[in-house]
Image: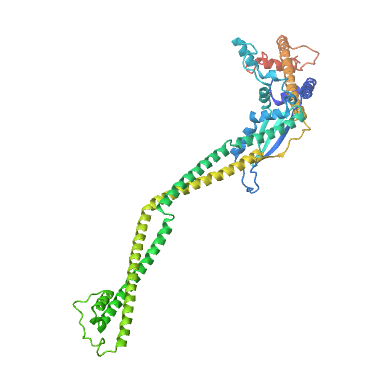
Length: 490
């Protein structure tokens, strides 16, 4: 039989009763399966993954790797187990099918090894439930978005919705737990205390050095000492000039007093004047002859007045000179002291700067760890309050229609299956009928002879020969093949 489309259609049309019966049977088989298979309901919960703050840019999105990682976390048993505890094993109806966890292969291996069926570790009901329900849980990531969709399938629509919502809550809690850093606050507190103690120790060393060296601020102290040294140098220069001036005045006044006769005539007064003036007479002072206790040729009162004023001025100059000399000595001592302080300050500057730097570094570290302690404490409080960047945007509702089995799909599959089965049956019938007819036709063709038969035809007419039927001739030609010819053709 030629397996062409025309042959198939012709066979189906020829045996349309068988084709129709087979088509109806196939469709009925799928309809019965549709009503016998228990329905499965699907529930989904949508989650938004993003920052909890409102100042985040709208264009910033979580990377694809993060979304995939969150999806794998949502499918883990660490999320499924708390969800099972929330809903309850009784509602999920895992106990009836718990014996199916151990497959046929496991039983065969146990039989080959000579082990009992109950040998091996005991699997808890929670482990069995988690292993079964993980096959019904799927997490999808929406493209070009930060939305995760947790999907769960179950025979009970109410349980399906409850477990999908429980999975969402369990996933949020798991994500918060993974972000939590236990012991971080205590670590930063310990480090803060350590650096606070270091600050105290460095400060004590710095204080001891400052108190001992009398160095509080090298730059400021150097500036003050240099300014004071400059002022003292200027004052010392002025004092020396004043001293020279007073010495010159004293020398001039002494020279003037030595010209007076009361001074020259009296050795005592002359010595006094020389001592006050800072000079001693070289040789004796000449005396004028006295007469009647008075000096000849000079008014006594005027000489006495001049003498008195000169002696008083000389005494005053001598006192001023003594004070100026003492002031000069003091100023020179102050300058030497300042120079010594500057030298000591320069020698202690290196140690001062090192201790100051150690105190500043310890203070900086203590401030950093104190700040990190506060930040970590705030984050820990937020995590304790269960503030997560994953939020539920659409909770799961009780599904109204089962996702499996689907009526239209089952009907279409039944029609396709019935059509294919009907065509196969009709082709089989046609093939069997052709095979059973071929031997009979061949026997008839071989026994038939093409001898002419006389009849009452008029003279001169062609004789009429009896030939096999058309079907028998086609059957014989098919069996002989193209290379064989009949005896009549030969």
